[in-house]
Figure 1 (tube, rainbow, N blue to C red):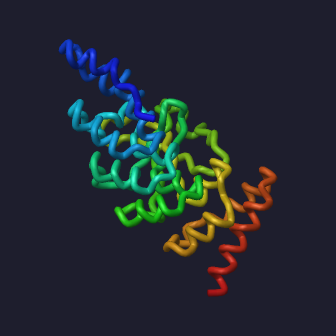
Figure 2: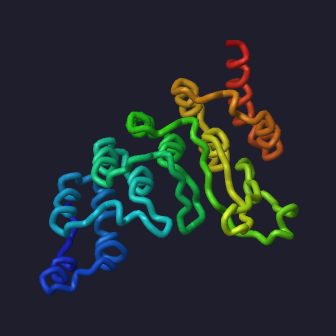
Length: 232
């Protein structure tokens, strides 16, 4: 079913269609609906009709590629988004308004969308990238009191060399990410192994962390992966 854009058309015809309506309100809702429906032709018509930039939808914790990966299984739609935005680098991290953190490749693997992962890697996504994200600012006197609110991410206190402000930052490889979002499977672990992930980047301490959290199946899968590397 075609998405109803009549409300935008009224604003357009009356000369009242501004960027706020296009990129934050009605326009954003409509373009998300088109993506969910998987209608590439309709999305292209929308872009041309209203002269919008897909890149401009990615702001305030919302990223249009991340949204598409979450809501579409279409490799063609993902490819269209990458080309039309356009994305020059797919190795980036997004923290949305719900404090959910992810990268395009990590998210696709968490959802076992391997054809999409293939496409992302063909376009430069790196399976060995480190997810890096600013968590919050902290006072200097609290640096040594910094606690890690996550189960498997690394959280480190850093000081900005220009502002001298302190902040907490999250660091994670793909294994830590999949454990953190509770999405590790034998299938995505096998994919990671077969697509160049550096096994020696796995912290051995994560196995004990998993066991403390009663994630014995995850611990066994990762332990087996490390053992296979040692045998090779």
